[in-house]
Amino acid sequence: MRYSINLNIIRLLFFLMTSFVIFLLLSQWFYIRQALKEKETEIIQNTPFWQRKSNAELKDWHDISAMTRDAERSGLGEHGKAAYFTNLSKQKLQRELFKEHGFNALISDKISVNRSLPDIRDQGCQNLQYFADLPTASIIIPFYNEHLSTLLRSLHSIVNRTPPELIKEIILVDDFSDMSNLKKPLDEYVKLHLPKVEIIRFRKRQGLIAARIAGAVKAAGDVLVFMDSHVEANYNWLPPLLHEIVLNKRTAVCPMIDVIDDGTFEYTAQDEGARGAFDWILDYKRLPLLESDRKNRTKPFENPIMAGGLFAISREWFWELDGYDDGLDIWGGEQYELSFKIWMCGGRLLDVPCSRVGHIFRNDDWTGVTSDREDDYLHKNYKRVAEVWMDDYKYYLYKHTHGLYETINEGDLTKQLALREKLHCKSFKWFIENVAFDLVKSYPPRGITDFAFGQVRSLGAPKLCLDSMGPPDYRAIGVDACETMRLFPSRRQDWSLSESHDLRMRGEEYCLQTAERKPNSQLLLYDCSYGSKDQQWYYNRRHKWLVYGGKRHLCLEARPEFKQVVVNRCRKHYALMQWQFAHVNHTLLDAYFETLP
Ligand code: UDP
Ligand code: MN
Image (cartoon, rainbow, N blue to C red; front, side, top):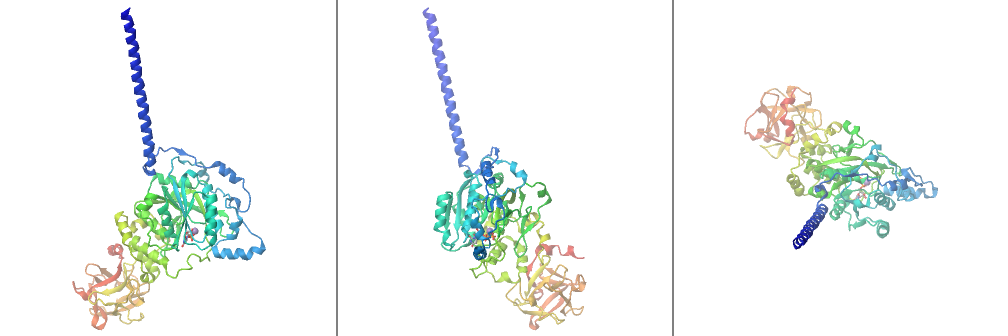
């Protein structure tokens, strides 16, 4: 009996002990699992969005109830319809405000700041889903004397049509506006109605670029979104932009820019979309969509140059690119700088058709922003961009504005050049051939085919340059004191070794040819004959010779004592036969003999 009791007690004890051990193990396991989970979320929260392993969960970001509310709205300008103001007593005021702002500011006042818009996206956009886990955005809007109701509509359109959890903040940068309603009244309005908005105020006018930089410095969101102060964000505009940045951190994305009419505020599409480009005075141009982009109207497509005002970029990537060049002043050129940088330094630029934002393109007569500065900041900006990013292609720009750029001091570029070096950015030739590959066909630069051009200096008599010695009139040409402008001297000293293999007055029809076919012969300017051996010249870079007439081995020789030039048998290391062009296009010259007829 005693024995059997003992056995039962032992059994019981054994059972209790195992249960205890199992309980211990289980609770331990739960504890560890919980701790791991917490650690994981902590890691996720502290990891930048592009390093998070996206679990690829997608979601429909449309705010259906807001869209339904909008659909029910009625009133002036609602649904992006054209608005008219017919009160005759206010016509004068309407004209004045139009002139001041470059758009119908009075009609803006009559339209609700919360107005509805037409959903003009491709139908397919309505069904698209984007990552459920998207980064946050800091929206940066510089403004200078923006009309108040237009500015407020920009802000409300953003707040009304963006999921709140995606907006880290909206940063307004007041570029020292002087309109009084943009000061206290704006502060008070924002405090009351737009809690996510904060305002930075400049104490002197610094321009759009400095304002964007200031906003970016302050921003804490994962992604920076730059916008103008006269825009209206359309339905579900932000998620498609952020989605592309999650896919590739080095992507900058632009929404499609719709048109808000400057007179009626009607909201319409510009066209089917286009790829950004420029001509050789750096005016912004648009290239047609590629056939492949046209096939799928909801798919983001590659864009060589951003329009400038509206885009999103990861904060990290923006600063890796050193933001904007802070030597760019007031306005202009910054879209080229950033677009070149993005493409050439390992990123890419996309236009996203399912993201749409309207913009007021101001009336052409409007001169507001540029009026109070005398200096030519625009061309200074262009020169900075050209000097840092455009390599030899910059000469096409300089050539198209005869002499303008030689008088412009572009300032210090050490920092920008060092960045290009540090990031191992590709060449401009690469950009033109691979990204903007159809630009040159649509916008051919003049003189793109010159082998060499500009002043031709004698190395044996370095103060002297090849000179037509007056107008081209069958007088012998010679050498004369070099002018100070090298790339764009006056007509007398401006030569080109042209694509027709002749040596001519640049851009003209006068070509160099000997008076007689023998040594010591002087040179005259004849009408160009395109392809005749008597007008054929070659520039030998090794010996610095200007070689005349095909294979006859005659070289241009300076006679400084008489200010003359002649041709004679080529002699090596003979300084009076050595010449230096202001600019040589090495790539073209390498292929000189292949291009001979
Ligand atoms: N802007 C600014 N300071 C300036 C010029 C412009 O803050 O010196 C602002 C302007 O209010 C606008 C944005 O920068 O929000 C872009 O300028 P704008 O709309 O004149 O450029 P566009 O759209 O004509 O290229
Ligand atoms: Mn604008």
